[in-house]
Image (tube, rainbow, N blue to C red; front, side):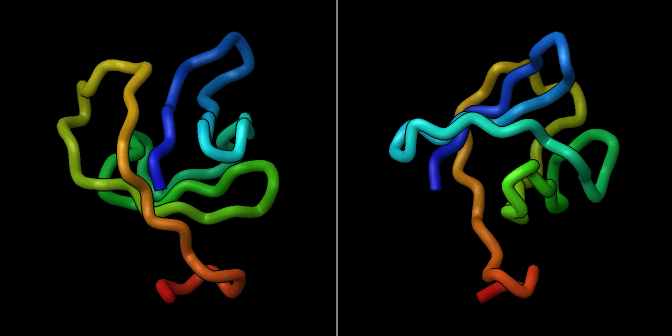
Length: 73
């Protein structure tokens, strides 16, 4: 799914254009985000692609949503 990751005064958040949904990122596997998973406030767990740690935000990427158990479908 296409998402935009951006920095806000409260921290990092994602925006999903097709759902008109914005949620803060509440947890991440890696400090740099890339190549690991992130968890957003609504409970979704998304896998992010490998990218350079100094990738600039905002950025639109393809993320893979895990199933409700938190595992890859």
